[in-house]
Every structure is written in C-alpha cells, then in structure tokens.
Image 1 (cartoon, rainbow, N blue to C red):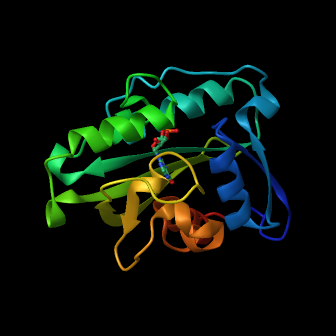
Image 2: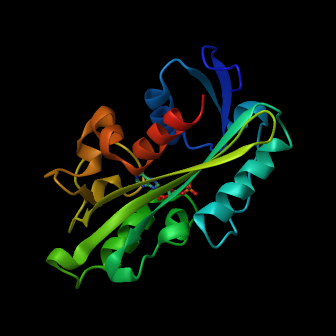
Image 3: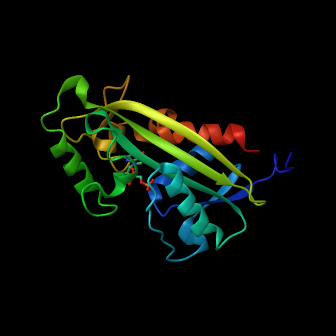
Length: 200
Ligand code: IMP
C-alpha cells in the first residue's frame, strides 16, 4: 500500500513522441499529470541500442532517472511482421534507414512485402511498459494488437505504421479510426490499462 491511491501523481514518460504522449494522457485521464521527457530534461536523448523491447525501455528509464525522482514510465513498442520473421520489431523507428522517419519506414515496409499477399501479411504491434516509482520499485506491463499490413496507405490519423496496419476485426486502418477507437484496441492502450490496474 503506497498511500497514493486517491492523489494525483506526477508521471514522467520517457518519450518525446507527441502522439504517444497524447495517447497516454487520453488513456490515463486525470489520475496522473503526465509530462514528456523533454519537460524535465530539455534536449534529452538516448541511443536505443538494446536487442529487446525491455532493454530499450531500461535505457530510456535510466536516462530519465538521472533528471528526476518522480515516477517514470518508458514505453518501448514496435511492429512485428510475420513474413519478415518478426522484423522490424525493436528497429521499427529506423526501419527505412532514418530514425523517426515514418514516411520512409512505411515505404520500406510496403516494398519489403510487395510479393507477400493475403493471409501471409499478418503482423502485430507490441508494447512493453516499464514503470519505476519514486522509491525505485519496478513493474512491467505488456500489450499486443494483431492485424495485417495493407497493400497501401489508408488514412491520416495516428503515427508511424498506422496507415498500413489493419487490426483484426476492423475494416479500416489504425490511421482511419480516431484516437478513442485506436486506444480501445491498440497494444499501447492494452498495456496502459494493465498499468492502471496494476499501479495505485
Ligand atoms: P519507440 O519509440 O522506440 O518505442 O519506437 C516505436 C516505433 O514503433 C515507432 O517509431 C513506430 O514506428 C512504431 N510504433 C509503435 N507504436 C505504434 C503505433 O501505435 N502506431 C504506429 N506505429 C507505432
């Protein structure tokens, strides 16, 4: 029992990705005040040299904890494509050759899958959340969203691979569904709801 259950707590999220922050704020509502990494350490960056989502989340957490004693949360997420043996995975944000260039990443993915058709275009998004509280206690949460890669882009919402990712049970891409619907089924939404259940 931490004694924090009814208070609004500060949460520093180890990302500078505005879309991720908006998604996390929308899911958490008013129980946490959410700040991005650059709000506590202007210009902060890190090299995601880990070989797993967990290693990368730890790199982000360690970078941030040098600058704050508040609760920190790191999200490491990516797209795992069946026909590419799980790639790009931890390399999702630089798959096209330039870190964070979503346009290139999607172009590269569509090119890599140009001869792959139908059910062989299966893929899933994965999200690992690593949470460290004010006392240094660590907890992990996971979420996954299964679907397939469309033959071309659809929609302008979201970020990253959203325009080409069609979740199972949906006839539109993640970029066509709006934040609320995306959060209800996404890897990050699922992991965040585990976080809400697990951290009080
Ligand atoms: P990270 O910021 O190091 O976790 O890298 C995550 C990368 O995975 C992003 O740059 C995107 O390419 C991809 N990604 C993760 N979550 C999503 C999502 O919700 N939609 C689309 N792409 C995502």
